[in-house]
Image 1 (cartoon, helix red, strand yellow):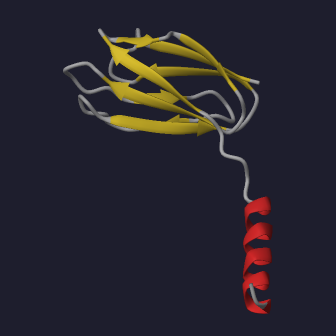
Image 2 (image 1 turned 30 degrees about the vertical axis):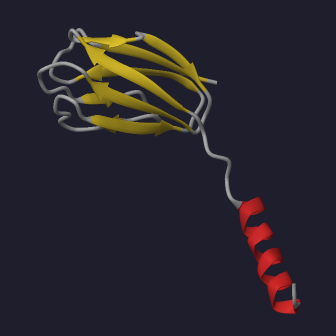
Length: 107
């Protein structure tokens, strides 16, 4: 490997070392107008992917301070994800079906 190749290899190594570690992904299924599971523990930076296994639309959101999100309308068969970055307990609901509730503990 020549000097140019060494510099490229070094630059690539530095870029990879500086890249943030990817978080995990946890799947929550929406089925029978309920979350499966109904509670989950994750780490900051992990993603929660919601999969809609129901024959109707859902809309996942959280109004928990510091962890607010609204994924909007989610059609049957669709998958949408959110990344939670701050430690704490996050309450997730379906805006269309208020009895659907999920507790996420980020620690």
